[in-house]
Length: 562
Image (cartoon, rainbow, N blue to C red; front, side, top):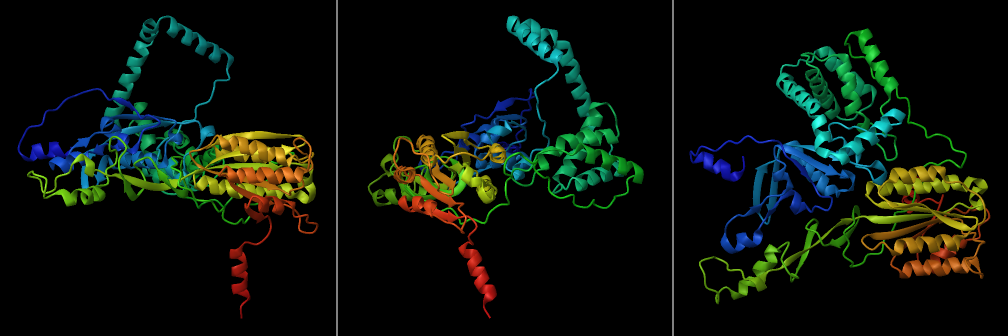
């Protein structure tokens, strides 16, 4: 119960009871944290001394279903709040030392398109079950979909009525399963099988075991049975494991059906005895392409970013930035512009303190509108990282593209951990192609990296120009252009020196406020130093691929010391 109901109950009041249908509450994509958890009206509390809570989405969804479309596009801190409330069954709001809690039991349902961005594996594990939806390839099935859609659009009421009987039967079956669920038994043998499956799939943690056991019992109840069988466990594993299989960025999210089958067969053979964990089969290998493969991740220096005072709202974990939202670390206060959204309690009291003698009233401290101050906050924000990759023929010499792809893979992994958006441009021949617009889907970026071919001339200036135009449109995040090249430009934009044009464009990138990083892939044996010249012209960060980092040098010196 909430605070008020608990107080009424302690006073001996009989609380009213009402029965109602479960609600389905939609969470808007642009919802703020206050919209989700609710908010305490601090201004009201200061002026009147009374606690006033304005409920949020978590209060509306209590004892219902909370549906989040495009859950992968929500800010991480919003997803964390949802999952914590779902796990604890309670929502607590705390602001300026004032706390308010209320129950929040709900079923969380999220949908997403993985190509638009992914959830962190740690968050995926918090979702009990995962269903992958695919298009129907069957000809008759596709025709039937079109027919049903047309029938609904002609007469919605008649169409719904034609399925009323089937819906009623399904509803009754679910209600019978709910009553039966508490009586379903799961034997030790089935628990052993669940543990065997999770061990053989190398699933980390124990949440998967618990989810499979609960789901298997639910499947049995839905089928009208009082005991869990192997088929229930298999079906539950197919729902509970696929999204838990990936533990590293770019690792395939897929359940090995053959291994699942073998585990069940082995269980049948041993009759529930726990077998030893199978030997490590190694990492999944990416399929070989007809282009240069992705090399091993490179040891690169940390990307250094120029700080600015621009307010940014892009979510992420790369750099601290001033933000307009209520999330973040409180770093200062300002006069409010219009309605006060996030009052700075301490600054407000300091502003009001000198005027207390001249103000009349019963309150210990009287606050007036001119005293109000608003918080200024900082939090980690993300970046838009654009890889401009030299795919010309010179990059194929001595397999430089293999090392270059390894460098991009290292930066992609870093971008994945920091929740950045990434894009990719490849230049070769006489064109620069946007292979991937800025996106949250690092899976897609990794795929484009694997498929990137090599050959032709080097239109370096065109690659930089294309990258500059793309990043000019992005203002809400830190912008990074990572140029990966050996610097051997031999195609100009409109006549003139290709190298000088590349230097001019590098300077324009810096003047636009874009962080430029130049990764030099040139071989040390015959070095022209052109990539270094481009970096120097724009005062950009320069990284030589294959050179040891300062940390490695320091480590070597320590090991060498007598």
